[in-house]
Image (cartoon, rainbow, N blue to C red; front, side, top):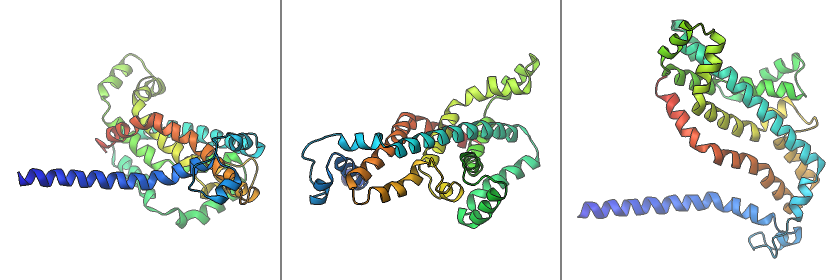
Amino acid sequence: MKANKNSIAGRVSLNVLTYFFAICFIFPLLLMFMNTFKTRGEIAESALAFPESFNLDNYIEIITDNAFVSSFATSILVVVLTTGFTVIIAAMTGYSLARWKSQVSNILTTVIMSTLFVPFQVYMISLIVVVSSIGLTGNILGLILVYIALGMPVPIFLFRSSISTFPKEIEEAAVVDGCSKARLFFQIVFPLQKPMIATVTVLNALWVWGEFLVAFLVYGNHRPMTLPLSQQYFYSTYTNQWNLILTGFVISSLPIIIFYIAMQKYIIKGVVSGAVKG
């Protein structure tokens, strides 16, 4: 009886602690969202008070700002191209490493994964020097290529682990029927990796959408900017106009939040399927 009481008390305490931390995380977001419906004067008077009226003037002003719209479109372009090429290249590399049964394959996998343990600051200067020497600084193509290179290790590992569990008999039957290696991968193996494709897509899109440091070093202040880069200039343009600044943050965050909510069920499923066998 005493053990049951202790167990119930433990669950209650855990729930209370969970709700407490949830409120701590959610409250600043709700506060920011609430202030997007206020005027500059209302926020100066009290940032914690409810808005007098839920008007959309701030949203209209932001979405009609040409600089913001161009940055929004640029970020979407960068995310789509980076994520698309990352998924395809990582899937092909993971498939090759999974089916190449040799010591060299294991060594290559170890080398690729070991890059995760090297902080970006260690090779940051060298990266910029190399990118600059080949003329890829200050343009979208250079930024996309750097994103693809930096974002490869985890997707390659996940695809390699997932494909390692894929039945070889299906591939062998396809080869017997005259299927080429390219058709085997793109028409049989790749379509059956949908959970892993969704997982890699979500993780990569989340990272690229909000990434600032690499974009600042590789792309700089060239126009059109990505959204994270544009925020610093957006802040300087609308100094002290917190109603517009917060509205810009909300609009910038909404697409990736909606995308994550729509795809979150695939993340755990894909990660688990990729971790079954490494």
